Image (cartoon, rainbow, N blue to C red; front, side, top):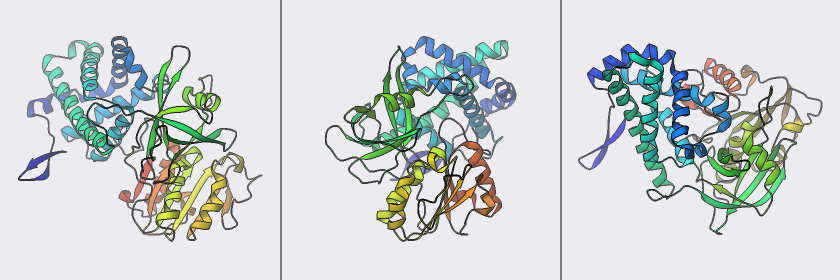
Length: 421
């Protein structure tokens, strides 16, 4: 759907393929679906060969492990299924998620032309003689319908962030404090380098951090949820150091931030973006997180401690152990400010599991969705690894929580089951 002006007000019109293109896309969807990841691998290869400067926008780790290619293939195929009526999954929320991510990277309309040209060429190279002129035209129409919807959304996001057309998203921020939360997590407090107040944000939003890496790796960008209080004079992020598994390299940006960034240094940050609010509604709130996924929940608690201190909140957090539970030291202060906050912790190792506050409970093992304290009218926010969120979301749905009251944040290119990508 895109807005269309009529008689002084905005109405919505449905985006549809032309009849001829819809027939061609429907007929060729099985082939494109079957070869989707091969197409997107070839797409990225040829685009980066022609435009190496675009490497600065993409997560090299997700490129190396194939996650980015898989996500793009799934998104394009799912959008085609949406346009042809083969899927009834609502696309508005997915488009909003993609648009917020693109805005946090500073994606421009001109880059959609580069992507479109290389993506359609990759389709032809992979599928060969099956890609006739009508097939090219039909899939070109799919791509540009998707691109136009995203460009429109991104333009609105840039305007809302106070950015003029074509203005870069990056601003210098100074590190004013650094705190070692655990052996693997460091939090950074940052303030605008020009001395202006930090912009406010919605709990659940994130900022992109751009760093310049040694060894010819150029710029790399990562998103980190804001963990402090909206409206404060500064921002805070918590960075988990990513260790490579099974021979994979360590995380480039997290290692740089852990080893190279100190108080007084300057980082380049984007405005706050992200379509998910961690404080939706005004009744009971359930915050469920695992590992570093606690970051948006902490911003929610910081916000509520000032804006709605009597709101009923249940915090459920899973971690390996008390020693790996980042920002745990903030909980006593937040409990004092939020008299209706109830905390339930699940630690795989309970040997050091003294609760951070007397009223908190600590259980061993993994979170059991059936045992999560649940108010029937609660809004829910989830954040953590995809398997964890799938399990908790499925359990809450079985317990009767409406799907529209379950929001979640996904770190990286993955999506939850039942979504189009």
